[in-house]
Length: 273
Image 1 (cartoon, rainbow, N blue to C red):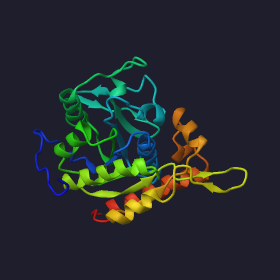
Image 2 (cartoon, rainbow, N blue to C red):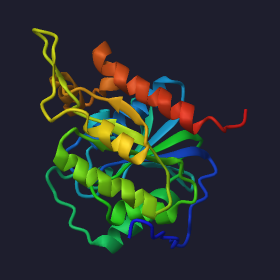
Image 3 (cartoon, one colour):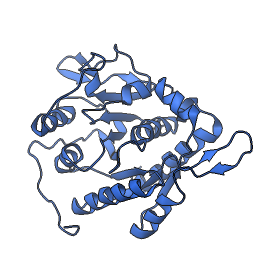
């Protein structure tokens, strides 16, 4: 199965002529912090001088608006015949949470509705000129990431988020092989919660294990792009809408800046001036 390709494409493929690069952040495992990585990557790319959009296709757990610092007033708006996404902390952002404002209300949708919503996100929204569109996908290899892969011709690659644990590695391997099946590129791995740096003794504690992403990197010959520490401050920043890549301490900002710089170096290497 791992060698089988999936060439099928959905109709009405968006051209995305005004978007230079499209990257998906995903994981085979829930709870590894992929939305935290997606939001902070978007912010770090913006701080590097890029125009960035962030699309949240997690229909059942849309969190990027809270993490980015958006409010209930940040809705897509219409200018003439165009529908534009709002800008939050310098990022153009679109999420299903902007259309379902009631707190705690579940989104109970089957696959066909989710597929249709993602198509609308691409075809009905005017993203204007962007250097990067970052797509935050839900856990797993189901409807949402599959729809994007079959919908888009323009796709630079995926960043796959893991933690060092063996359970996370099992699911992340499935995500890696998903992109192989789809014949799409994996730009690299990000190890989140890689270690805890004790504020008293300044010692790294490997709470979820050690070198999990490194072993996957070596096995699949995929770059390890960043190791993000487990930090109460990062968690607090994301809960309160203050992305760590901008508001965090230097030791928390640095891994996201490193990630953005590596993405830029890889993705833009063939760009024409």
